[in-house]
Image 1 (tube, rainbow, N blue to C red):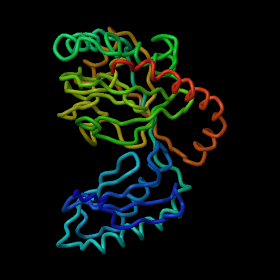
Image 2: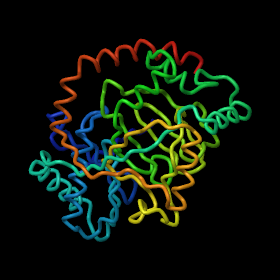
Image 3: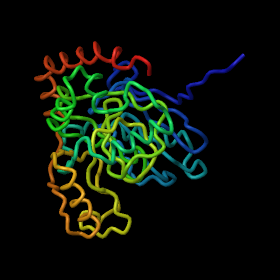
Image 4: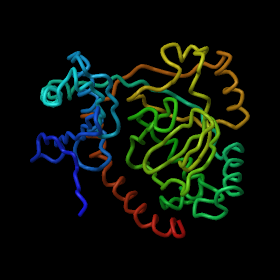
Length: 324
């Protein structure tokens, strides 16, 4: 008889679903802290931002690394220095302290990135996939057409329009490799979604921009991947940190950056990409803030339109994915 265990150590705020915190064992040296219910909620990510910040400020001996995600944070710790019961108490104290911070804005830069939609490089990699991995699938031969069908949109121009209509909030880094962003469209009226490749590609071009689920990702290097490819942007990983935008780190983006894409031609994009590596291309980056209260109020105001779009998506996805 099999034994099933969810490895739950304790649950905080158990009677308040959106405030519930589940603390789980995750192997010998890790603890996983999960917020709320299994849904996409930017508010969970804001609470994780403050949880991480508070724990770092506590400077607890034995905590080696904090890795926040969309609605959870993995804590790597040394159990010889920091017993598990003490770590749980640290998490409890930090969680209680969030109330003093959660109405404060989070630092949030606005980063403008160029994008060439339907670029030849991405299309070539899709053709290579068809030749070597899978010849027929609902997302082939055109990923953008597939995204349009999944969302009940009238062709690739609507995908382009929706993608450019909203900023994308970076809620995680390293989604694939090298600081790749996991970002969510902030305006729920334009939050497209699509399932990933099945099976994945063996190669994706550097700078490819894709949609997987409700998330946007940018590929920092040529690599395997499964996001539906809609275009390509400039390189945003600089190993030698030669471009001024990479002085602090070899990756460009930070959690809570807001990415706004601007459409350019493929020829323009290639010139810009060359300029990243020789430090002649200047990224457009402006400091700013993200206020969760103001954002949630905005979401309430546009909920009727967002709901109509979600219903259209629900009606379209079944037909779009037949034969997946």
